[in-house]
Length: 412
RNA sequence: CGGAGACUGGCGCAACUGGCUAGCGCGCGGCAUUCGGGUUGCCGAGGUUGCGGGUUCAAAUCCCGCGUCUCCGACCA
Image (cartoon, rainbow, N blue to C red):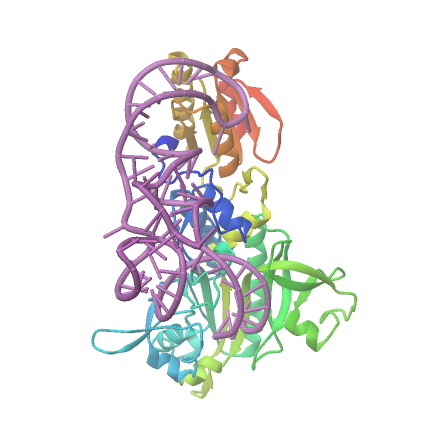
């Protein structure tokens, strides 16, 4: 991609929304643009990051047997009356021209339960494991912190349907493992399994909290078993639910995912039963599992940056290489930089090429740091004299000269 | 939802005890200059001051209503 053609510009001016690092850096670097409170546009750079996060999640959901579907953002209010959730204060209500009461879905139990009911009549159909990646709508009383708490936000939600609690429990464990795989691929290794209150069906639900000094949640961490409990739990019991250890350490964190055992709460509301081998009817047992890709994007920005800008992990960086051309007024330098760009493209390397003429070297360095791609390559009269291109990783200050022939091998 | 504060070219701000043509920086267009950590100079475009009403000879400025945004708190399946 030629930087001169890229839609979205870096900005020198500090945005007002200085309450959160992610909102500030992501807008300043041209990844997102706020449309209104808690609602953001994703510009080309930001969308690439979001898609990469989604793709990693998609792969891990497929790996545990999930099948991707896409449900509508709209639903009839009637379904919410059925489950007695139509008074939830975060629900966006709207009316069709015909006068029907509709809802913008904040979650999809009310949609997926009737959907699965249409196709699942026998024990032979179970388990059913369906997920989607879609935008959710929640009328938050106070949207804030950039991508961390929006009114419209991206979510992966997986729903599981089982014959019994034992099958649910086992799948619940499988999802936990898959989630940690995802966090490790996203370089969010500071993410801790956190016990939260479980509602009517089970004693606990679980949150996945990324430890971050700028987080708005507080968790209580047990250094012995490397898990934590949230505020609700700590006020009920002051010890670790796993080992009974009582020295729990408070830490600031960002909730990036959570999972619930729903039991038959929703299946009962929709009269959803299956027949076993003997023809007996049983309630379906459900679980739901959410991860917020947009919130994860914010969490990565929040935890991975320095004073000069963002530092993307390679797995989600919008491009792998930031190629900077300096001295482009010189015909030979320009040609050699263009050639290197073409060579990288031919090798299928994602590269953002700062080809802007008339822009000073300093401005290009500043933009590169702000955008935060993992690897910076630079070609100039000076680097050519030294025998090639300069190579610098975003997280390091070390600069090495590399002959053009060796660059591809080094990157791959 | 409670409390506080804001709204002025695309962005960040100034002018506000009412008074000249609403000013500055960034960004944007042009010309020249420069070329390794946000070059420099000159020229230029861009605003019915959030919306509606009121007071006044005169409103960005004062008053009323509405909207939006921000901050603190409550809330966060």
